[in-house]
Length: 257
Image 1 (cartoon, rainbow, N blue to C red):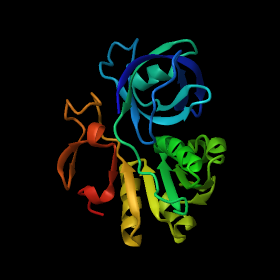
Image 2: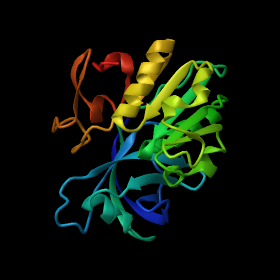
Image 3: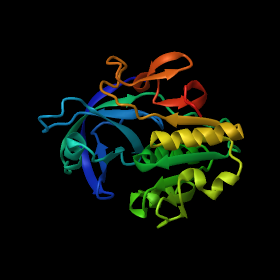
């Protein structure tokens, strides 16, 4: 897909939790086509110690409002600076980057979308795309506490939502791989989140013989495959997650699952 460098206008910034914000971006022209699983490289202005762009998953694309949604976890100076953006500010973005999740070949397929932490972000756009294609997904979302479960009202628009929290405050207690919904049959799984969680989901998929794709979150700098800092070992050799991913079928990864 063609890549663009755009100065997008901040339409709104919503505080989702103590450390997460939702940034809604727009442009005077129609936004480029973007696929579920792709990401954006965002330039951080006003931070003298932040030299590299920050890769942010595409959380949602609202074509009716010409909006791109980015969920940002404020964990360092660069992302904290993004969290301080205000309506009317301008953000320079390179987009869309990377590949995308695989869509099912039949509306009858049962698709499970598993997200943990900020890894829930790309699951929303994927879920909306599945719903639009006539395939209603099941979401399995996990967090440490109920405060870590974000955008639940929007997730509920696109499919069944199953929840886990480590402290048991919301949903079933434990990790996503402990949830009772995994006793059901699924034809396809897509997941994003902490690596241990994705490896556990991949192990479950392997045991059940289910196709599974993961969205890797390796450290990325350029987003174009030039700097080689996000290399992942695969059955096809060392590949750049930003260019050849971030979505990989787990069969291609050299994980000990």
